[in-house]
Length: 547
Image (cartoon, rainbow, N blue to C red; front, side, top):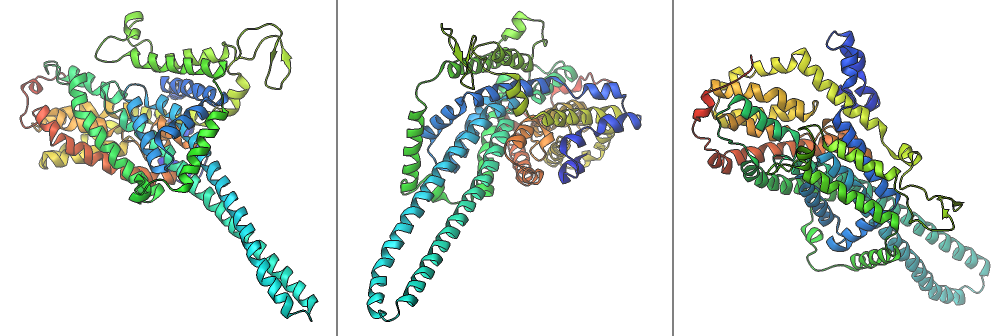
């Protein structure tokens, strides 16, 4: 399946359906069990997050936000990329990576569309003025030649027509090549911006204990396997180790994506020497565009309130350091981010798009109707929802379940026994690399669930601190950067950014290396001191490993 996804020999969603056929036929899983994997809670979160994104787009709220972001950050693409990466990573520390990506991508897309339109208009004006200047320049020599060649007026007229025709043709071809260059530039920029948002969301999720599921799985496994650990992993200790590591990964990831999609020119990037005329013109146009939007409509305000409420509910559902509303009001682990996303997105189909008033309402076609249309209707959702991505995610979950049931994961764990003969730092590096590779074709939740018990028993057997291998591998499970199916943010970026699988593989491969080196630097420096990694802890002698 990984090979098919890389080569795209079949549509990605069709490849994702292979487990439904092959797992039952190979005797790995029953068809009814495999099929259940295709609509998990993560898919519901994905649908809810995208319904919010569709509503934001439907009422052009993303354009307003995009222009406001542009006016604050400036119009240089590299600084825009940095701004979007910072916002995405900070958001995904508290809310799900999937929801963050679904919210940020329409905004980044709108910003680039605005920049592209501005640059195209500026170029069109330049060509018009260039054409006028050249025409004026040609008038003088024409008159001089006319005096010399009075005896041959017919030849002169022909020469004039030919020169004028050649000049017009040259201008048109130059304009066409410039237009193609702008198209290519913004196509590349769109890919880079889409990847930067989804990668920053995955990186940001590693910074807090509640940021992504593998972090919580590590805490659960440590508490289960080593009951007397003295709460070694809690919200504060995790943040102390993982937040600096997240910043490190973010900086190096920005440098790599900058180099890959924008080239590396420090003067252009940081604006040494002040803004050029085109930057000022683009900024003035943005300001004018923002002014044209006028004041916010009732529909925009309603979408913004639902959107903000959703973010607040996500933030406060299970903050980690205190009990969230989901724990206080409902049985533990009953309500998830997906529940909240679906609840809030349902409001779009209930709340009207205009304030109540007498005399009827105008619908989208300008006809008078008795009741106003709702903020969203199913026709719009049906057209804009990337349904194929839901199957793609399901295929990833089914593949992970198959790895677990078939015993492939157990076999991989048993193959790690010879590692005790090599130094601890090399063990940590190799295992991080193994987990980061495995998580590309499996969900990060499944990867950590499968690997952590194996790593715990291996660490106690060779007498190294369990966290020395478990902590880097938990974060490495979030480094799923190379395949669209590897993690939901990648899938969303893939549906937004006109990306090919090869684009993601090329960008993601280096990010995986950056992530592994960064995590292992952290575990051997500040992490080593924080968790006293140099000694084998007493609590690790008492284990409750399941047979």
